[in-house]
Image (cartoon, rainbow, N blue to C red; front, side, top):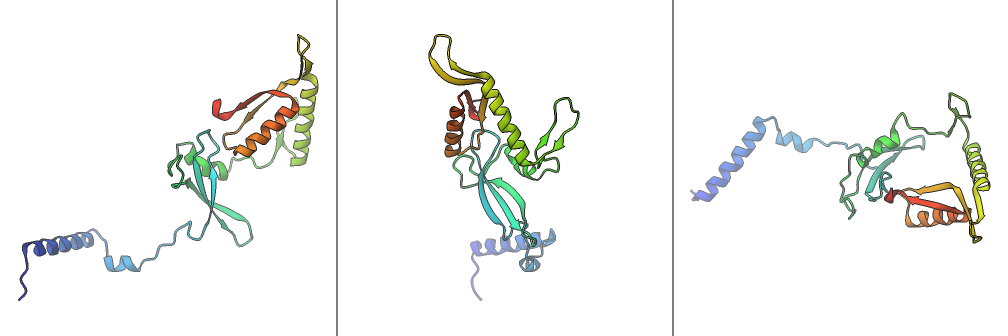
Length: 194
């Protein structure tokens, strides 16, 4: 008969007690190996993005899946664990990014409320962009200053301000600044400083 050492006896006892305890709690180890769980994001495509809320720049991972009709469904948004900025963690606002994208209250089309009206009406993107361009032109023309009080040429407009978003890439921020400076704006701000 083989000799059982005290150490072997303790190992066998611990393993037996653990298995008995798990089965007593309802864990069927043989059955657990047979169960294959299908996860909601199994086979989903990963898209990397940046949280739109503040200037910290936390990285997000969005999981999307293509539907049978060709449309794309957003399944989940979570923090990117590979990001050195947030290491997969999100603040309470960043954790609601999924609700920002899928909320039933989200406005999907441009709305316009005429002066004196008490209701909003849907308009096309072309109409809204044309209205926006007209308003920018009117504001620029009515507040344009070619020379200041001392006679220096300044070529600026003081009736429009611009605030950049924290989710801008460097290139988007550079482009937006150039466009706004081209319009003569001097009041430029960034969400990171607000």
